Image (tube, rainbow, N blue to C red; front, side):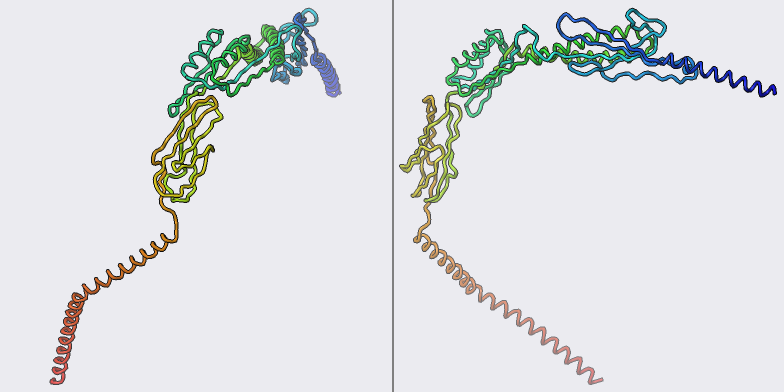
Length: 435
């Protein structure tokens, strides 16, 4: 009886202990939420930070090793992004003013919401990036590059790059410069004034004010979030907590540096306009070419010209050496008589510059097809065949005696051998009969 009483008593005490533990666990594991916000005097929305204190492990669960760490958010803060989380730490033993958590070792989740401004701030100046492209013809490439460089320096700009090329006595060049945006129009006017002719000119203006304003807003939000992370870092309780917060700080700092780099690039390109200049020499270099230099009378020959320098369009004056002329760019011509012909070409550009190329004895024409030539060729072929046959016959006549002598000697040798074999056979037959 006493045994059953003891068993029942232990069961009652056990149920009471389990009930107490369940109530304690519920009390400890109730999450708490705090909201932090900053005032902003710049008109840019400040980040709103929500601190959610996760369920605290109960003493009973901790004693048996049943508590687990909190999840740490993988990403943090970004201009125009939705709410994101980063780790923070609080002290369950104390509470700061305004309901803010104190210091301890249990992780909590901090969520921040940032909003990037999408419109230009009131009163801000527009940020315009201007670029220009000029293709022009000059008398001297080297002198033009030096003059452009001097003009750039006089306008407080600088040369980005310059290159000079040479091809068959013709020079060309490319130079890129940056000048203050306020000097852009004046520099374009100076380039037009120094050119013999401007063949192509383009300019463009890109408004980057919107992008710059958005980047500025994102930067302020990220810097504010970074400051909050630094504050949270000072309240971290363990090495693991410090490393987790430091990881988020590093990611935020990297994004801040990227935004600052882009903003600096926009500032520089808006302040210093880019102009690219392609230079061509005004003097002409001319080379004429023919599709073939050796042809028969009546063949159609194509002629063309290779031109470098000068100002298009060009005019052409061809002389084919047989009295025929042409003004086409790439003419075709037939020569009717055999012989050597001198071809010349005069090219004039749009500015009146001229270049001449003359080729003496350039085209060699041989006679073309006719009936007399065909008959003559046939007769010559027939005579060639007769000559061959006659030559063969002469060789046969010349070699016939020698051939007869050789054949006679061969015949006599074979006959002697045959007679010898017959005598030997007869002698053997007589010996057999005698025996």
